[in-house]
Length: 464
Ligand code: HAM
Figure 1 (cartoon, helix red, strand yellow):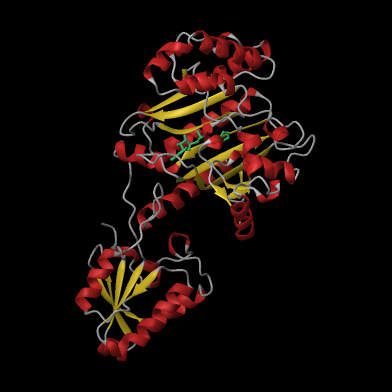
Figure 2 (cartoon, rainbow, N blue to C red):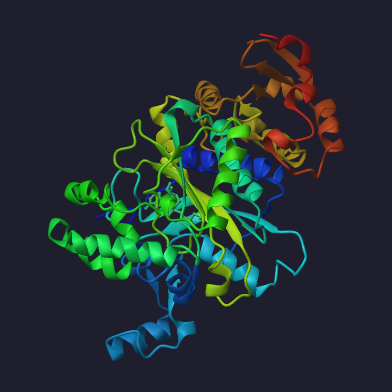
């Protein structure tokens, strides 16, 4: 029986894989304008990085992490019946998100030296959460994220939110389909008392709330705001709100962020129940939701400030903030808005052979063109000329270069422009001389310094 990809994972077939690459390139370019540099951290980390960083009581850590065991440790854990005998460095987990690992790397490599400018880092890659798969919710999904470490001022929060919204605009998610929610989660000065008041509120309404929320009262009371149970969400509407309980510093910070967003013309909805699913947040949190065509997984991206995270992974106090967006959910949002452009394979030229006698010459021309950085293909299946033209059409070749024994004996080939259907005979040696000037470029496709029209002089008859 043929195997399928594991439940909750999806193969990125070429059209989606192309979109993933172009999306990460767009992100890299846009984020570079804001001073961001790339970083890549391991796909697995010591489990403690996540338990300490994200919080043991979160669903992400408590219920959804994939454990990784090396061969030896697997045997040891199996013999002992648990992981308990393993040293911390042997307890590993696949990353459920990127922030904890990036902050661990920033601390490990001292990327935010005292008095230095903030470290601005972006990443793109797979994340793993053992959730129940459904539309827009995968067990292996892809995030593009940014983290800024060392910035305290509200301008950094506003910059972060603006950058995320600009990214969605650039990708073509219509503004009117998006809802930007913001909130402040307070800090060490005001959150403990607020948390206690929510805990007390849940206990006072215990008999109306689900078992999970009753448990949350002790472990993570703020998560009760996210309960999907209708009665719980109805009860929580009357719960105390963080925005009524912020200390002066947090209130001033929050007001400043909102004023900066107003000035930048970014519309947002204040949602005092937005608590997010990760425990590291302090002060500003935000989430972008799309309602159209998303099923119940409407959050396409989110983030916030985490001024205590560096300390919880063993670093010195370093304020930070960031966001991550879900690639698969953004694709669903683009699809629902009819804004997902077609992603087709496109090659510069297709070298077709009239018969086998010209195959070696065709191969030689293809090699020269590729070495000059052009994207060209030829037939490797012994197909008829007609079928080769069909293949050329399929890969959207701009030109087809037909090599036949008669023309070849005079050093010529017939070139057809596949858009204008113009045809001409060209001199192979001259084309190869031109190609050889660019030999060794090997950059390929769109970034090639030459284009196929120049080599085969079609410049002027392709104006359709
Ligand atoms: P998050 O809200 O957990 O935040 O995830 C960010 C985005 O990843 C979500 O808005 C969603 O689009 C996507 N996502 C999450 N889980 C899944 C899933 N199971 N399937 C498909 N897509 C999913 C974070 O991960 C934080 N690290 C963001 C951050 C960065 N905060 C500060 N810096």
